[in-house]
Image (cartoon, rainbow, N blue to C red; front, side, top):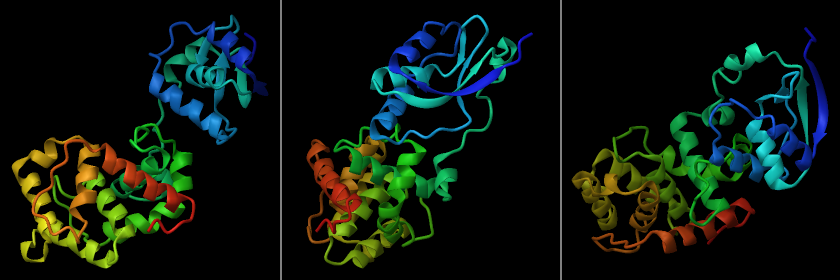
Length: 268
């Protein structure tokens, strides 16, 4: 049997399509994952690693279908390791190792990494549509500007409370604190919210808690929770209700703030 040979190659979109022609009996194709790789290529963030594409002697693609699809869709050549004459018997054990999580990549807890993910998603798109598609490289790049934003709120209270200390709510409060005349007051309001200290909760934060306690907040989609948190921690509102028919205008405003932060602005 011919031994496998690995070669570092520049894979053109046309070559990627040829490799895909041999994509038989592979695992189910995930469009969202391939789209994330495509966006990484278009951003210029693709890096060469030991992982790449594997083909058997008869041209069967046993590893790399998503990478090939991403290259073909992006229309940009990508340098990558390609293994020829791969043993078909190795297919069942390909990509069965433990995945490196976002938290591992950032060197942080899972809860904190989730907050950074929301902030990075807001900076990338007004609807935070790419929340689940952000790559580890994108999040590491965002960490520099997102860290001080997230820390102010995340570290304000070490306690956690189900349905309250969720990433979307923390991220909403964090973005609000950036444009608040008193960021520390926002952090303390979040602490009161988590510890259920009503006497220290502004009216709008009390409204957020009422929605949480009745299940209205928990039943909302995370993006609506994000928007409601941003509204609730506006301590100058003085209103006792939070009514949002749609989250989009609020997310647009949060996007503008996050973009300014990511570009080194003060967002105020």
